[in-house]
Length: 91
Image (cartoon, rainbow, N blue to C red; front, side, top):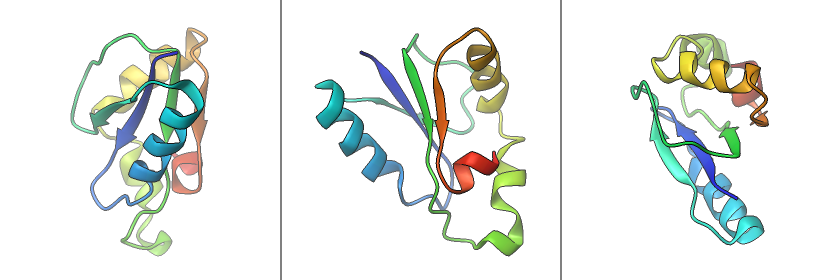
């Protein structure tokens, strides 16, 4: 199984998510920077939480407008399982 972890500025749980996915799947996930507009085909996409800036700054709302989110949305609508945790869920 190929997976991807979307990485945003200030997030700190992206590495934790990558470790967990590698333990579960046996494969290192792609670490996709939020400014990317495309990435390799994957079977699962994770949006981590843990933004260091604080919820009151609306990190999830800002991150939802990152370049990568158009591609994440397209793939989720096509059926690729997508999981958001904490602020990642807000996105």
